[in-house]
Amino acid sequence: MTGATFDAMAGDYDRNFTDTVIGRTMREVVWRRCDACFAPGMRVLEINCGTGEDAVYLGRRGVRVLATDVSTAMVERARAKSALAGVGALVETAALRIEDVGPEIGRFDGVLSNFGGLNCVPDLARAALGLASVVTTGGVALLTVMGPLVPWEWAWYLSHGELTRATRRLTPGGTPWRDIVIRYPRPAALARAFAPAFRLRRVAALGALLPPPFAEHWAARHPRATQWLARTERRFDTHWPLTELGDHYIAEFERVAP
Image 1 (cartoon, rainbow, N blue to C red):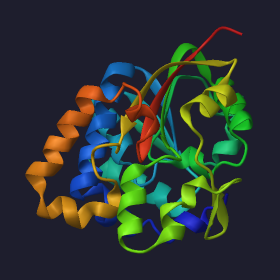
Image 2: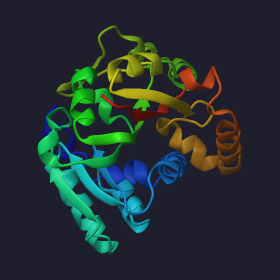
Image 3: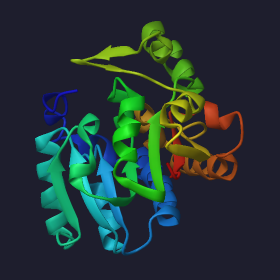
């Protein structure tokens, strides 16, 4: 995975996702899990930090963050956003590939990966070993990952006559996108890749009932329906089959003793 792939997206990322109705709604769900997992004073490694929206949120809560991304343009925006928000003393930034995480970057009480960064990693087991080398025993890895089974996506694209896009997540070996391949592991496959260093303790759906980001125009036209779907999803988000049917799922792992 190269930074150039995401450098080109840095300038428009907040406008295209962070500041949208669906983007805000999805991120607030993840933030509630951040509140449950990361306490003030903890040190958290954020991988694929993007423009730093989550790092700023954690910094405002008194969590110390090393925010990393493969894209230098994303890292620069994260650094500027943290300074503007007044949390520059709590949020460090660094350009770093997920695959290159190792003991030399220090020790952390937990790790955060939001909105599909791990889907771009060709070897999840290798990434898990790197994260295990920096997370203390008992620490939490909070990972938001894109799954393969998304009825919203099937219905949306099939209704527009786009069979290839409707079934892209089911392609064996992953889906080529720009100069990378995106893979869509189910929660059980992710758990196998992260074992034995990490134990899966919770999975929650994100975007199973709530429309995925590509339906932003629909969500903007139907705010009350969108919020109703979001509330209903939160009520049942840890229940099967919703955990298998989201645009993303939030997997919480605990670092176990070697």
